[in-house]
Length: 222
Image (cartoon, rainbow, N blue to C red; front, side, top):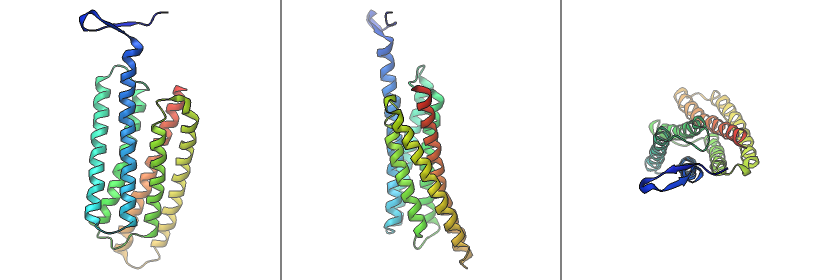
């Protein structure tokens, strides 16, 4: 069966597959850049918490990364509105972009509160949660880079399971940290720390959402 031909200017034609491939590459490139930006935000947050100096400048760095992530997501949505054919379901592309954006929003929210609440020193649990976020976003960056080639679907599934495990680790860290907070007497400190810890843990919830979307994409396209 001959490949369908699409008309071009000047009477030229191109095969349907040739027309689709650039569309695929474009969407996958954008998603990979989005995941890379989220992982970069996680590293910036971890640097802030591990080396708690120049907090205002480091917080601005996180915000700059978050703005860049917003721009990528906006571009993805614009491209979806303009594109008739997408390499995977457009709903999955939208979900992936949205959930990655949510991860970065929570990273930014935690960094913002560290500055606004004038935290003197982050707790060990905050650092540990940021480490979990760093591990999860690094794994997701790898997985997003694999969905353009469904032959790597088994590895994407393995990463999805690992990110779900990391979310459970974050749950335990949060629960133990919040329980320990209530043994303290400074109510204002308890409220501030609890909110930051919850934002950090929420970032791992959204990482799990990303992992679930990736797993769905593999299931649909293998």
